[in-house]
Length: 381
Picture: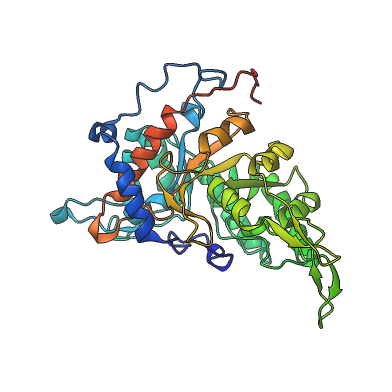
């Protein structure tokens, strides 16, 4: 996930992304876990709601009812065949039971399949919905497989979304890998079209941000041999996309980790006069400028590591250097946001088959402990 190409794999599969430095970051996460008392993993999700739920001073940064997780984080547990001999369970039922026990109230999907050995066939969306209901969970979104040249296939995805009770359906890839305006214009037209199809069902279409969307467009001369601009006015691709898409039809999910990776990676551009200009990306200001267009977030953490192109290595939420709590408090409107914990490298493989659920518990405990220090009395909508 460290480059643009790594971030645009098919989003409907549970293995839709390659992991960013899995072994190194997992080691960091394990070290962070060693600092937490073992009792932390026995939490039943209670005892963390003693403050007001209105997001005001002293209240929880993330409201209890909004504490979510994208299921990509625990994809290894969902997709594996249960193995009683090794004490391993798997599938949606087991994962939902475990997440509900931890205290999570919402989930975001990253595929709708589990190991066929569990039921002797593939599970259906209606059966998944029943398991959600049985465990008191709500689905707040899904990284669906969307082909913008096939409206009928998208309507089938909307059928699934309705079955699962999804208020949002998302596209987890970059709208275009291009840095030219004309390609972003084409992508915007398609998003507006599909956003209208979703709106007709009472569902909001969203685009999930990685880092490349915040790179600078090539929109100024001189032109190359193909007549394409080679320099930039300083306009970032997603800022341009905001201006092209209808706010009522196209929404966004910022991955906070990738937002700060973008801040690290995209600091300078070559201006039309050939000089190097500096422009620092601010994830908080980006959200606040388009506040109602950001209903969903990935609460993903990382420790600073300048040996990596991205500048960070992923770790459980609340154990790294990404200012997650500060970010969520500064963007405000906690009653509107759906913050979903995510960690790409949570699965531990055969060496640590329980790691992704352990990280989910650790991250939940940390998120639930955050208390809002804002004093502005900002209300929710």
